Structures are given as C-alpha cells and as structure tokens.
Length: 354
View: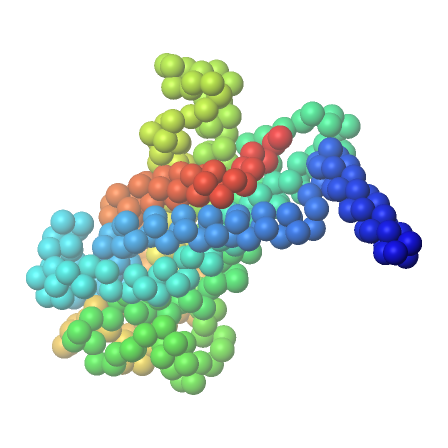
C-alpha cells in the first residue's frame, strides 16, 4: 500500500511539474511541441483549402489564359476573353472550361499550403533578426521586409511543386483534337520523364522563380501593409474594433493581386512557352494547323524573350493578361480571405507582428 501511495504521489508531482513547464512555455511565448505540430498542420490545411477554393472559382479563366499565352500566332483560335470562353464552350462543352483543374488543384493545394506556411515562418525569422539588428524589440515588419518574406515563400512553394505545374500546363493546353493525349497527372509525369528526361519537369523554372519573387512578394507585402494601414488609420469607417470586414479584406487582396500579376506577367508567358518545348505531338493550339505549323524551340529564358518579342512584338509578353486580370484579382482575394477564415475556424493565431 505504501509503495502504491508513493507511486501515486510521484505521478501527481510529475503531472504538476509538466503543467508548470507548459504554463512557463506559454508565458514565454514558446509553444509546447505537440501544440506547435498541431499549429503547423492547421496552418498547412488552411493554406491548402485557400488554394483549392480560389483556383476552382476561376478555373475557366485560368485555362483560357494559358491557351492565349501559348497558341500559335499564325493560327489564332482564341481571340479575347469572351470569344475564347465561348469557343471552348462550343467545341469542348462545360467540362472543357475546367480541363486541367484537377491537376491544378493537385498542384495548388500543396503549393498554397507551403506558401502561406513558409511566409509565416520567414516573417517570424526576418522580424527576429530585424529586431536584433536594430535593438528595437517592439519593431514591426516593414513593407520591404514583407516583400522579402513573400519572395522566400514563393520560391520555396514554386520549387517544391514545379513538376506538377509543368504537366498542368500541358494538360490544360491539349484539346480533344490533339494528336497525342495525356490521360492524367501521373500519365503526363511518367511520359515526360520517359521521353524527355527528369530535367524536362523543370523547364521554365528560372523565369518562374524570377517571376515569383515580385508576384508573391508583392501579394503578401501589399495585402499585409494595406491591412495594417487601414487598422491604424481607420479611414472611411472601414474598421470596427480593430477588425476588417470580409469585404474590406477582399478589396485588400484584390489590390495585392493586381499589383503582383501586372509586374510579373511577362515572365509567366515565357515560363509557359518554355514548358511546351520538346513536347512531341504537341496540341494543335501550340503548333498551329496545316501549313501554319511552327515548331517551338528556345535555348533558354533570354532566347525565349528575344524570339517572342522579335516575331510577335512586345505585346506578346502580355497575351492573356485580360482574362488573367479578371481571374487573379478575385483569386488572390478569395485565397487570402479563405486562409484567414479557415485559420479562425481552426483557432490558429494569424498575426505575424504580435
């Protein structure tokens, strides 16, 4: 009996010590390991949901944008946003509007999860070093520091999921009349690996990384800076109790998306064109029809820029900009707001500067 009492006492003491340690960690702002893992999982889930919802909402415009970017200039099939959407509907039906969206979601869900999570971690790290360098432990992230954190997040997310983006581009471009059909994500991946080698999965990676720095960086920097400015200045009665409404947050996301995509768009066009190089039996929209066929051959990013401007003019770097603008503004806005709402539901702290 005595030994059992001793064991119970030791167990009680151990429990009290553990609780005290967790309380100490909480007071010091350090998460207990199990809580930290749960927080990471919730953050990744929120980012994934945000990416899937936002991309599916604008899938028809995403597909049309890619078709406009890569179509043969001597065999025009898609000539504007409305005409292009009508043409897809007439020739491929409702399913044609969402062709490639499954692959897009399979890519964007992990991409978005990694991107949002990486941004939070990069922001915390940058803020820590910034405070140490300045000696001001109450300092907050500046727009430039947010740009750097967003750029880091974009590069990490893009590199981690790039092969999926590459095959998604090809799946999106192929039509029912294409001479060769990829049957799905894994078939496309295995075919590219077998016929073109592993390096082919990263065609267009360099312009993608260069483009993602201003694109993702500006998205996060503009969105977070706009939110902070509105909360501090409370203009036009948009802020109540230091909280922004869903509509106001959507507007901040729309502004962020507009700035980011306008700056980075030419690099997105070049990335798509480089992804099509080496595709045997490419879709007719890429190679053209009949005597209009023209093979796509680029030796690198600079060569792709040079040939595109030389043969099609500077405006070719902005092909598909209109549907992309119509798509990216709501897409970015929906992604940011969905992310924050899901994190609110899951009970995860969002603010980086706290």
